[in-house]
Image (tube, rainbow, N blue to C red):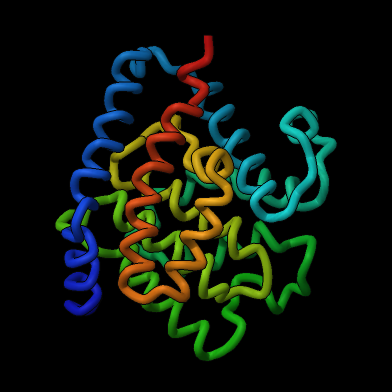
Length: 243
């Protein structure tokens, strides 16, 4: 990991409004998990969170399936792809910071299995994409000196806008975001549904990703402020809140 990557992420985490935004989002997540009885949470609740996340991610990727169709296994191909990723996602959480490139490749291999020829699965599109993936991997390997939510938000945006793989970059980006929140202790049981937070604010989600891509430092700043709000919305969308 280069010191430049750590320095860059640390600087982003200190931008105006970013620390307070992410602290508020983290406090909301912690309160939700505590007040709703985290210690009694069943594995089925995690499975439901992952399913809702897969549905939301698929819709953001272009799926037209309903949540009921996804739940019943009758969704379209995009939703099937997102569900496949969700079913093995948490197994990769312990490896994300240690072997980020391996995890990124695996997530794309699972997501794109039906859409691409085998030789394109898990591989960057070109040399520029390979370099971008290496930078993303360095960000995913940073230590606790960078807040987890900042790492999650930056990794998500970098994958989504760089589109380093031949397909399913959005699905991979949102899966990595959830993995960071799990692996870095924000949401160890994966009960928050960040994908649903993005879907609930789809216009802002898409416009802020464009700003991240095209708007320079101001666009990155705007994305981070948006991400804090999206994570708070993802906590509200948790199945822990049902009933």
